[in-house]
Image (tube, rainbow, N blue to C red; front, top):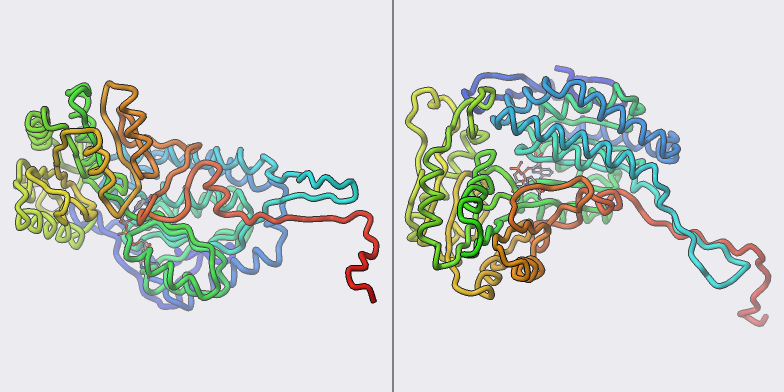
Length: 489
Ligand code: NAD
């Protein structure tokens, strides 16, 4: 099994172990991949270290780095359909969603290629003719990029493209649950001319290969997307050599609907907000907050339409939602539904596995809608990461904002209203990294993405997404030095 990529070569893991990658639709075996260990991690770190410290990659002209990114974008476009199919087999998401992901990934590579070509240094006005002062940007060094299972290729791209644009050497560690498109991405980066050792790939569990990356004194930065508990651990474990860290964690995202919103459109988006990719989306609008006067009718319509969502094989035309990613994850979602019931929430839709015979081999769960929810319930506060919607009601704008902010997270949220003034007021006051007005889910390569509060540290995408991977250096040059005589003797 030679699918680790270290120092420009595909190599086998020193552990000799491998693990199965299953299709969540029917549990069929999609692939076997290397299951690496700490020795492999040490080799990958040494490889990246050499590439960063002993080659000219970090100081290569920006057009060289941009060239690698642009060629990668072209290769992704060339292989789009094949990669989309792999993503669907690996994650269970619909082919339509996988294609959208890859279009986004291509756009992100192109965006950072363009940014890599823009010179970010600046001259500082010192007010002295004998001093030249400038601020330049340099890569951070060796970056460990650790990604989750829900948007494997997309999350990898949001890190890889800016990290390489800035001139870093990287070690990529995808989730052990869905590693396949990341392997493909590394093949394409090599084909696009990434120099040996600049891009390294480790496959394996968080414990076996993720933790050694985070703890290593030879790694300068960890950029992590994943769960809150892992993020907290990483913050502590990365402190040994005071690494740079960037964390993209979970969310419990409010979707606030005022009575003056267009009813049908807001219902429609409320469904996609939470049920796309079976709710396994960090920014899922899993917390629906509706104005009292329309609450009952609105929630009833959402529940009616949730019951109509067609579950099935992501590879098949007409499937609207695939399965959950694994048996363990479905059990976690089920335990949350039981918790919601025990807390007094009332089921309006779902709350069960589907009964269709063809879905029995997969990890399916019916889209679920809870009503009679209160803000202090755990089902309202904690990230379920599945197709589970809670609903709450409000009477005033103040109350809507207070509910929307009543969460330890702060990743994303939305407000629906036809009153432009109110839309702006609410958007300004929501403490979340992204706020949509009369929309849900779109993001742009040019616009920062990330979390307030416990949703994370730092930003991906946009100019700030590149800054995460750069150090600023002030160079101060005295062009006419002479003795100062500060000390008289
Ligand atoms: P996870 O935290 O279990 O794992 C994420 C990655 O970290 C995996 O590659 C895993 O192997 C690795 N890992 C686990 N333990 C580690 C350790 N001790 N040291 C180093 N690496 C370790 O998360 P998950 O279940 O794969 O993903 C779901 C979570 O990701 C959800 O909470 C979701 O909200 C979050 N997420 C956030 C964003 C965002 O943009 N904010 C995007 C997607 C997913």
